[in-house]
Image 1 (cartoon, rainbow over the protein chains, first blue to last red):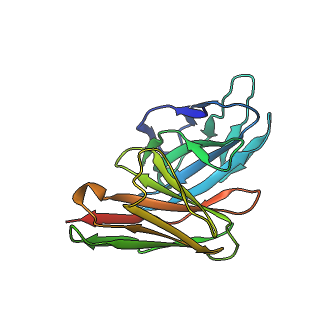
Image 2: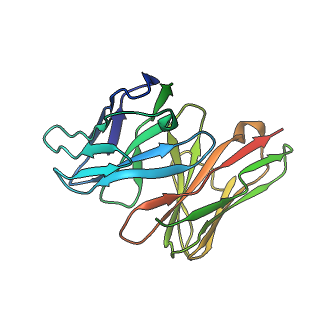
Image 3: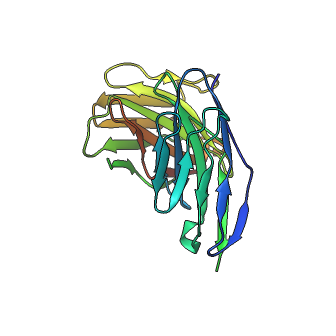
Length: 111
Length: 114
């Protein structure tokens, strides 16, 4: 079945540091890929998405490129802020409508 | 983007009582809604998928008699935790699917059973 593997956290960075959170997936066919962000005590918000190979999703300075050859969708940001501290979930949507999530990676950014 | 409203955001109930959580899509019609449960420091576990006007499809290991799901209209789904016990304490999140696009999530409900 479909699965998503993302790096374990927490990831601890200083403000303005470069961020990478790795995400790889296993799926049949051609899934859509997503990154969601969850702030403390809240639900999930869609951060960015890509629906086909080589697509780059971007939002709020975050980027991720759909790499079919490496089955990856790594999240990057050039300069993180304290307000980016949250849990980030990589997810895929395959042939059915349900989303398959990774375990989540907590990001902690200190001033 | 589309808005999904979940209510209440927090609820504390006594053991043995039932609690109802509402999930509404505010500006679109959601033919499919999903209910997740999230344990501390863990990912989301899909509990069930509900389609408007039909019975919910429960994931393996989820007790359908304990977690009653009703999707009576295209904008409202409810999850009722019946005869709640402390082990049911968790963060419950709903999601609504806009047809052929993406899923939008509610704010979540923190359930504490005492």
